[in-house]
Length: 272
Image (cartoon, rainbow, N blue to C red; front, side, top):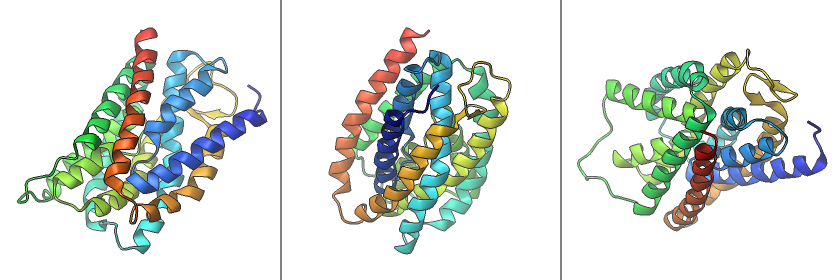
């Protein structure tokens, strides 16, 4: 699989775009990356089942870098709720490990694609509706936060996203201000990515027909180029989140997500 200049440009543009979105909306970029990496790998002869799995794993690995870059900008503005990061992280690590070490390796890529499509559609719908929580609702206690973290980590591990599609709605549902929820979600991206990446590397060791320069399910060329682009634009997105009309931007982004979900639905159904 030659690593030609056109491929570098494609991956760099992906990195620049998803890094900005990660900072702006508190997502790790996975919802954008997975469909496009799937297309790129499929176009280079990787089988449909393996292409989806590698796209999910590689997308998650980029979040290690995007999260650090994004959260630094949010932290400077005092927007990160570190008490929530501390409360959710243990459950996130446990849920991510269960997903990436066990369930991910057992499920076919076609089912993962369908699962991805369903959750991206759910996330897009949540962005469109922008429901307001009951004013009396509060953040749960320690046990509740660990449980919520487990769900976030597990779902993230199955779809290769940084958890923002679950953690941001969860925190706003608990009456955490949207800017704090976005910033905290960016901080949560690192433990989510770390737990899942370790699992993807271990569970992918025995997989056959991996493309060159892969470690487990992670495709290193895509990781390197996308991460390099994303760390440049994630701080720009984080700064923009405090000045731009995020509600309107969410609805535009939700429209894009519906299209990407439709593509992954098609991939999943045609490869069953």
